[in-house]
Image 1 (cartoon, rainbow, N blue to C red):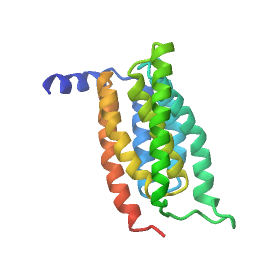
Image 2: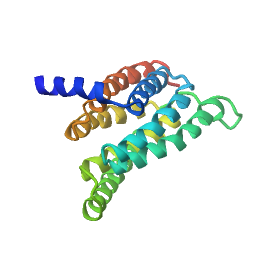
Image 3: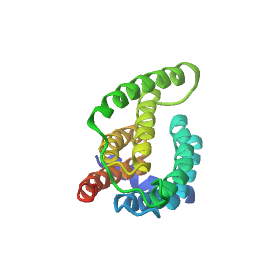
Amino acid sequence: MQDIVSSLISEAFALNWVDWLATVTAILYVWLAAKNNPWCWGWGIISCSLWAYASFFFYQLWLDAMLQVFYVAMAFRGWYQWRLGNPDKTPKKISRLPIWWHVPMLVSGAVLSFIFGYYFAAYTSAAATYWDALTTVFSVIATFLLVQRLLENWLYWIVTDALYVWLYASREAWLFSLLMVVYTLIAVWAFLNWRRKVV
């Protein structure tokens, strides 16, 4: 544990401005999303652009880098949905996903995770391919749910962010691993907060 703390401190001092800015803006994004504030999407665009760069060039997590580019595109969609997403151009409200929808999402997510994990393990030098694929696929699913302001997005984020804690720790990206601990805790709070506002 002492080695991890020492590594975390060393990494924090060694980080460049890209890592720091990605971290700070990421926390702002998740915190504002948890508060159901549409300004989260602007911070998400900044954070994910920087994180894509760091994931690809610093940590060789290629699928995660691709995921961050996807997040940038989805942030524009999220901004629109949260502000004008209803047919009458009014803001979309928080709602629930029918429970039977989770079965096909979980099954298709598991299958896609295996396919992407196998491909990147066999044909690239990417690291932790199956775990990277699993977290990437389920982050995509959670993002679609978040954009639609569906309460259950936070349940997917809780599990996915907890897995990211391990994934980044395995790459000795301690600051990002710590950030995922914060994300997990915020996601738990967000689920409880959104549940009180659900339509």
